Length: 366
Image 1 (tube, one colour):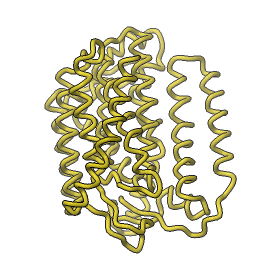
Image 2 (cartoon, one colour):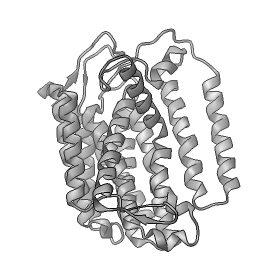
Image 3 (cartoon, rainbow, N blue to C red):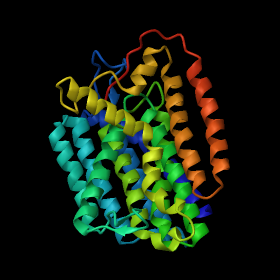
Image 4 (cartoon, rainbow, N blue to C red):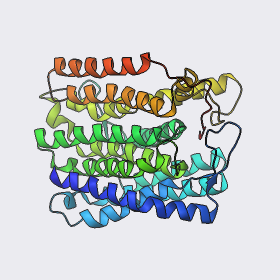
């Protein structure tokens, strides 16, 4: 655990140090979010936050590669994840600067998923009447689908200062706890790769967040949202690929199901927002990727909540779903229910009291 904590701290420190340098670079190269009628920011703001995150991740990998325990996590799959993350960050950086069309970005995201497949990173089994090994073609299709959906879910939720960064950090922390405890409780030593990736995600988000909270000095942009979405997706996929489900399913069904269910639990809010946006836009005869102002955070802002309060409310929604599901894998159900009640109560009171802001505008990035 100590080495993973050190990894997260190093990633946070590097992200914190790298971000001001990226802000200057973004301004120099014109990667700026100009002011539009639908935006909330009043000053043109740099967009290349994903580059700062990628730099922090890359340098962290170089440093922790020499640690006794964490160093064992670097293998063939870690190399594939790094290359896919590098490609998706470059794609996002180009979009932040030149505003690529939706189909080009979707093709690029599929190509990033293809890089993962080339390195053998894919869904191998499903818990159907026990454990069913999937045909390679079906496993690859599900892998690409999970990567695309997760990337775009994080991208869609990135419409308010600090929102996607905080939700990604909470999601990664929950998945880290699950993957690490799974390794400890069941002796699954090969579960180190997802623990490493999620520890790094937590770190880069924590280090980047001080610059991204309202009023943001930098936006993560598509370079950041796609980068985080890819890493969260690969954390789930690599865990299912490395865990021998038969070894734990005989003792308890929960840990067998959780590698597949937990990502949907911790990303339930972005996924819900993504689904509602697709339905809403298609019904209106628009492109599923056409921007609008009807996301969940826009509705909270319309109720009178401030930007900071809206972000905290959505953080609490995420934690209310993620924490109990993680606990349920290793503790009695009543413990998970108790945690859900405590977090749910806190979330209720956050939603109950409205702020004084009237009809605020919110920035739309997806």
